[in-house]
Amino acid sequence: MTSVYLAPVPRSTVAAQRDDGPLAAAMGRLVLGQIPPLPPVIAAAFVTGALLLLGVTGADDFSVFAPAVVLLLAGAGSSHPHDGRLDWLVPPVLRLTEYGFVASLGFGRSVPPVLIALLIGAIAFHHYDLVHRLRQRVYPPSWLAAAGLGWDGRMLLIAFGGLLDLVPFVFAVLAVYLWGLFGWESLTAWLAAPGSGNAAADADVQE
Image (tube, rainbow, N blue to C red; front, side, top):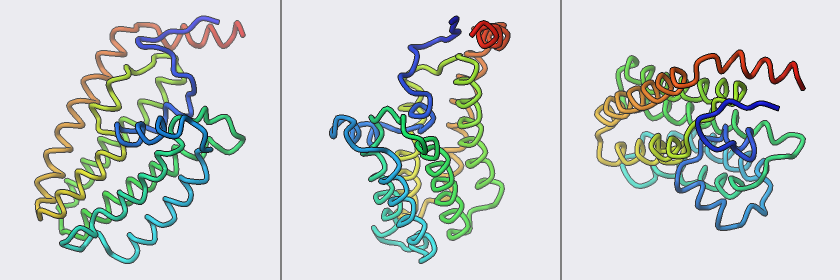
């Protein structure tokens, strides 16, 4: 099988789609990959969703961190191979929870809708690009998840903005940073791998 990639091949494409940041990845290493990924993700997402419905993102104290901190429990399964029958559900659950948190905090703090759309758009672009690259075997570099802060880092940073009552500013800065980072890295990666899609397609045919 021929692979086209710019970085080491991930041991699990499902795990690579999680987009874990340093904190979530560290939690997974702490338990040595012994915890299945789906149960903690489902439990954490359920509690996080309940907190969002209760309106904690509108609080002006440390409770604004509650959804992000609770979802960190999902990091315990980050080092698992994600080889279970339903483990493919983990990335979309993390995606929806992060998007919901960003939207809830943004609308709850009267952030201009365009800023909310720009920030969620930057994150969604990265997630779409990540899935497409994994399919085409144009693998992202290992530093990208840390530079992009991961879902955990982004949520904590936005919550910190809520604590300081700087949500619009944080949304604007983070949107510009993420669009610049993900857009530049994606463009340079695809330009450095011309014909990667054809090569991957040929490899699939040969298999």
